[in-house]
Image 1 (cartoon, helix red, strand yellow):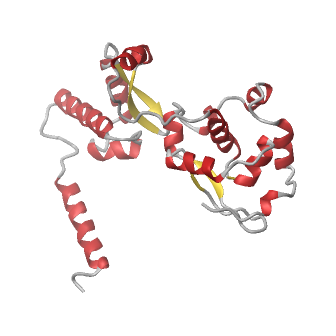
Image 2: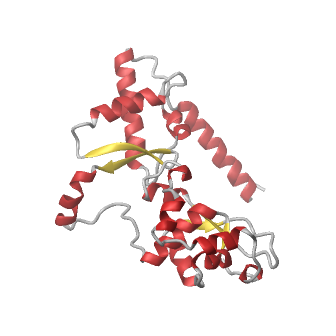
Length: 231
């Protein structure tokens, strides 16, 4: 049927494909310098408009097939060298960020900011970091790490802030949900990948994580892990 979801999806894909064909990525009618300049402006516009870090694949859709994204980014970084904001590589893409030295100025202005990081309690922040290290991890396993129960409210707060999401079901009894970090987690904490997380031994030495709890969890100790959990 013409009005069926399948037909509507097909029309949407056809429209998208037609628009992509009409979009001039190569700009062959422009001299090389103007072509490069236009590609730079396109890339900066996409990054500026995006609410999250923009991947290389996304940027490649608006420039010529032989254009070097890395060289474009290098030129943009150089161009912004004396501006109060910069272009940073984070969470597998690029994003505009205000330079750190202007943080106090922005706070003093009390102006509302875009994408302000959600304020977490100390315990919520520690739970979030534990998810980062041990993902996919269940709520019961998190409880063993901290030697105390991690409430569903704590998990909900981290989910609502966009820092964690549901991972695969645990193979343990009851198949409880596991939790994993999101791309927003990497972006909010200025990390390119999870390899940028601080040394876990430093966190244990600071008393932020229980070494005993970590070992107990890694040894697969029984207990709450068989409990079925809500998402």
